[in-house]
Amino acid sequence: MRIGTGYDSHRFDASRPLVLGGVRIPDHAGLSGHSDGDAVAHAVIDALLGAAAAGSVGGHFPPGDPRWRDADSLDLLGRVTALLAAGDYRIVNVDVTVVSETPRIEPRSEEMRRRLATAMGISPAQVSVKGKTNEGMGWVGQGEGLAVHAVALIEAAVNAAG
Image (cartoon, rainbow, N blue to C red; front, side, top):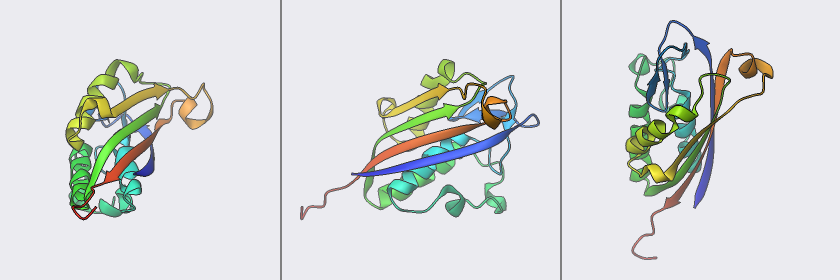
């Protein structure tokens, strides 16, 4: 068993749509970023890569590379899942906490769980997504953006030799 943690944060950007966990959230400023700015997917990617000791989201999908401009972060998550599978790792579970004053995460957490699970090829029962506020403290509490923490547990496949 191997554990990895991931973190991502972005400022809000009113010129972009908001996408979190693959879910488009209407009537809210989006997130700045080179790809679609999906901080939930980015934190999960970093947690998975960390568990496999395989680098970071920025290392695999550099923000200066035009191939990843406005990329769908769930596609990037699928690529990382394939990378883990090629290394004989299986995702056991992923836990995500979104820290934001707005938008509220709970009304969309089930859809985020489903979309993240689909991108990783696992059951939604293996994915947790929840929201917390920052109680008005700091840049997140002042509504300048949001932050995401993720933890992933993966296991190495057991070879035939044991």
